[in-house]
Length: 379
Image 1 (cartoon, rainbow, N blue to C red):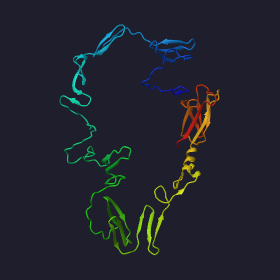
Image 2 (spheres, rainbow, N blue to C red):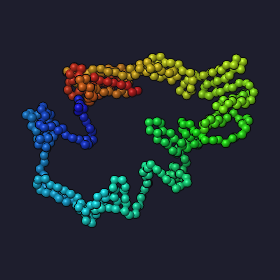
Image 3 (cartoon, helix red, strand yellow):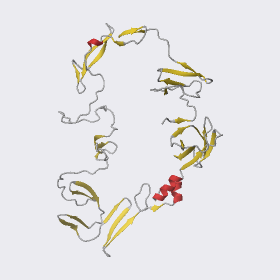
C-alpha cells in the first residue's frame, strides 16, 4: 500500500533520486494539472495539461539521430540503435579496463579479478595509507605488535589502545592500555592468571592480594584487624588472634560484634554517586521525573509513560485545520497521524502552536474521525 500524504511536499530544491513514475494501463480519472503517469500500454509518459476533458500530453521527444561519441561505436538515425564501447571485442574477461588516450578507447590493464583473487601483473606502487583486509588467519613475523603507530614521536599520548574480542550476541570484551588512567585494563571484565609468585610477608600493609582459581582481587583491611580467616576447599587458614573484622566500601560497613557473636551491617542512603539503601518513589514523584534518590516501580513507570503521551481522533468533514490540545507542557513532541480504516501512517502539516497544542493542516477536509493523532513528549 502506498504511503498517503495529505498536503503538498516542499523538497527545497533537493533531488528526488531513483524515482519510478506511477505505472497505469490507462489514464487516471479526475487528474490535476501537472499530474504525470507512465502508460504501460503505449510505453510513454503523459502529463495532464488541462483538467477539463481531461487533456493528456505525451512527453515523448523527437530524436533524429544517435551518434557514438569518443570511446563508443554504433549509433543510427532511426529505429532501435545500439551503442558499444569501442575496442570491446579485444577486452579480456575478468580484466579491469583503462583508457587509451592515443586511440580514444578502453584497453586491458594489468589488473584482473576472477571473483576470489585480484592479480596485479606488474609492480604495485601505493601512495597513501594502506588498509588491511580481514582474514581468518594472521601470521606475523614481527616480535612486537605496535599499536597507534601513527602517533608522532613528539606528540603527547591521548588515545587508548588494545585488543577487542567480538562475541556475537554477548557483550564484547577488551584488554586495553588506558591512557587517561596510565595502566592496563580489562575494562569491566575479570582477569584470570594461571599462577602468581609468592610475595612473602605482608607485615604492616593494609592490602592483601588474593589468588583464587586464577582470579586476582585486592582486599583492604583496617589497622584494627587482628584475625583474618580464608576458607576454601582445601581447609581453613587463620592469621592472628581472635578479635573482630571490619569491611568497608561504597557506603557499606560490615563488622563482627565479638560480645554478641553477631554480624552488624550498616548501609548508607543511596544517591546518583553512592550505592546504598533505596526508597520507592510515589507515582507523583515518578511522573515529575526529577527525583534522584528514589527507585521506581513498574506501576510508576507506566504512570510516567502515560503522562508523556496523548491520542485523539481527527476529522469532521468540513475543517482543514485542527488544534489538538495535548497538555504535555512542551514543544518537544513527536506527532504522528494514521488512517483509522487501514492503520496506515499518513503525512500532513504539523505546527507546534504552543507547549500544550499542536495544529494539523490538511489540503482537503478529512471525513469525520477518519484519522487518529498520536503525540509523545520527548523532553
